[in-house]
Length: 366
Image (tube, rainbow, N blue to C red; front, side, top):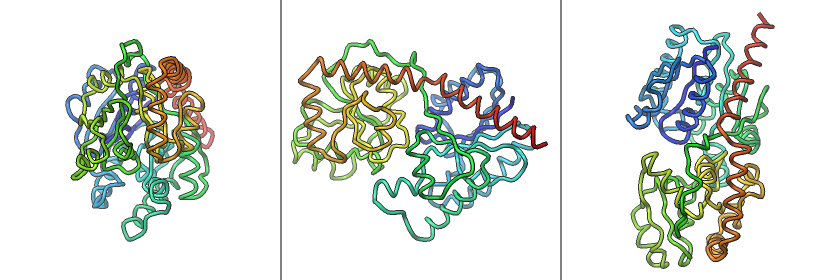
């Protein structure tokens, strides 16, 4: 079996791709991997070294959700067509909607990792409008129409996608996964809570941390950079214990999570949430915004604060910080659920099943 996979180097899709491609290669599946969104750093691509049966073709074409991407999409689609012609894969696994519109008889699995329309609905309560939004909607609709199978990382994300673009012909939910042995659940915990995300991404809602009145323990936020005025705003509220530690290497992120007693999942838009999963595999107790997708993924393995409520978040952090037994109970609950339900091997197996089903359908139709 030979699969052409598209990915991006900007966010969590790259970690998802690492797990998927590594698992496929170990199962003897040949992979041609094409990346977009910027050239990967040496650290990002180090995992590809020595991986048998994987050909990697990085590009710096813009992604479909980026403004001014229209010309890049034309060129990147041409690149994908050329790679298909030269490498002759059996199936396309597409992490961007737009390439679902590429013609041909190959089966196309399109993964809805996230989406601008559903993000806007979750964050602002209404879809975006204007010329760019109209163009973007058209790109996504064409890509979905060309898909043989649409995969989402949660039932909530699939429902949100269909709310925005209508019912799809064939769909499947495959939850994301991470490799447990890459994380350290046995490290000695320290008195701090961790969180992660880009401060400018309103969907991650990291400003909620700055809105708390005097957090009960220090908070370290990875991947975030303070915006102008945020530090002063926080200090005015007494929130001097929230520290943005910036972009972290993979090893540094693992270290941060391994020693964090608590992880804060503050997102108001979260199709799945790889960062909370990594925290769970590091045996952090998780406090999460009470939104449907996080309820679906974690059920009773985490504690929920009232949706978008900084006071409720602070009260829950204080409760956990002051009750060691409760903190350990929820750290273990999160870890056990992560290992049982969201290990990378399970995710890879389900994708292989989906590939086999699509190829069998193609063979029957031939």
